[in-house]
Length: 116
Image (cartoon, helix red, strand yellow):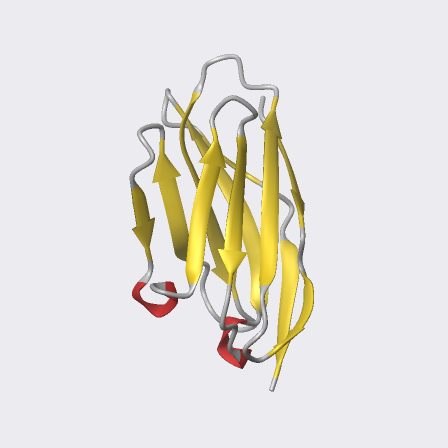
């Protein structure tokens, strides 16, 4: 079983920055991909960005150029640097980890609120 601990959410002003961090522990089978999703009130959960073992990244169009995902394979951590925040970035952000056996585990979520 994989445990994910997220940190770094909070309140920011439009144009500001926040960094989210997620630490994974408990996986005996290795991690293939780590990423961040978000869910705004009344909306479905959507992918924000992910990164695989090779460092290949994918970003949703709405964060390209503003958010940067990074990963420390040795520590099993993944970070999301969020710059130029917009009010529409307000959501609960979830860390997700996919194992080498394609099982996906979710963090408890961390709330990000961006004021205009």
